[in-house]
Length: 99
Image 1 (tube, rainbow, N blue to C red):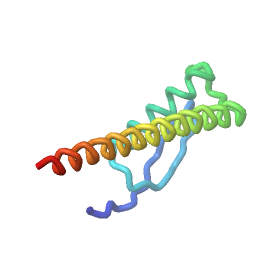
Image 2: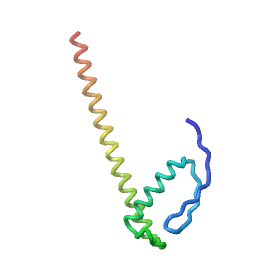
Image 3: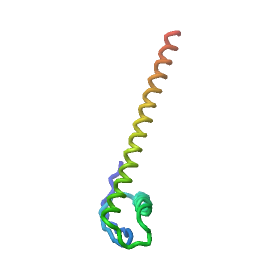
Image 4: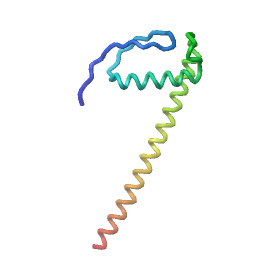
């Protein structure tokens, strides 16, 4: 895996410029920014120039909730996969015993 270099980028969220350092690609940054803007716009009028701390916190909570839900879904899928592999292994072993 190649190591990506850190770079400074500037973003504008509802009239507030934010500068940060990232190793993410332009596509990754664009995807994250789009996701955050989407979550923000659900809570505040996109034409508004005022973003309160409350809206920022609610956005974080909404995104964290989605993250938790996706982690649980991933774990459920992993568990189903483990169980499927176990069942298939037992079937293969029982077929091999017949040979």
